[in-house]
Picture 1 (tube, rainbow, N blue to C red):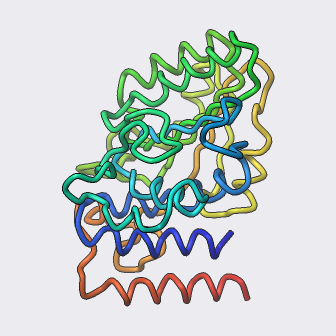
Picture 2 (cartoon, one colour):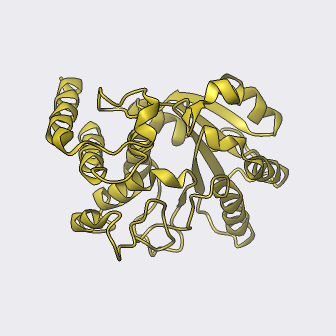
Length: 268
């Protein structure tokens, strides 16, 4: 798993020689790796019984593209077209831009309501698939998130799991300074959700928590995953600037070697 996550991060370094949101993409690499290689039931993107995944924080789309490639949904060559003229790999995901992209997202706050609708459809149709939605921590300030949260608990959608990428940065400040993430758990519990908190870079713990949903029968599940923005590259880790800056072209190989060294050291 560490090698897979490192591979995704190396791809992100190369993709983000143009385009912003590098730090946001790097912070979710471990979460997506665990989801796609350990948790989601997706033998094929065309299987109607597959689990559904939505990336509500659409600005981190590059990590989703790289993960889908790693999972075999598309060849690696498609990533060379990221943000290129005529490509379907935009800075925010577009439905069917790659196999496995279920919905267009990026206007923040839309993923959870869409996920609630998918989960309700699964139940009404007697289907066994589950729905997972990954949101940003700053994104939870959107009113539509809370409308979706209320609806999901009202309908007792325990086939719906939301994950918050809690890296404590949003576009213009630390999230803690705007809407404290330290209070996420009691707020979501008050809205009728079952909540767990986890280190968003600990593969074993992530798998353990995500594989145990629903946490409570009759309640939607929320995972607050504590992450580091820009995780994997020291120059970018925990820095607000990584939200908007591209990777300097003269740093690409240096960053890739740093990621390789970290993955190798963690395995020893």
